[in-house]
Length: 102
Image (cartoon, rainbow, N blue to C red):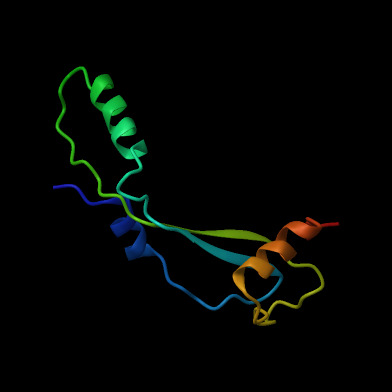
């Protein structure tokens, strides 16, 4: 029996509040539309490379959620995350990249 990566990851992650000198911007891509053939092209390449005919379950097309993270300068350890839209948090994250040791 196989377990998908997303199921494994969900079991080990928690959505804790963001605090301190870190920017976190969350982003989710929608699942591809039905007329997008990239999934079939990729699975076709996998099938071609599968010279030993090893059985695998073809994964479903799902949305992809991710987080961009970066250092947030001038903030104390317990400071809560500002209430900003995700795209604004991302802009702040990439504006002037800084590192804590400078």
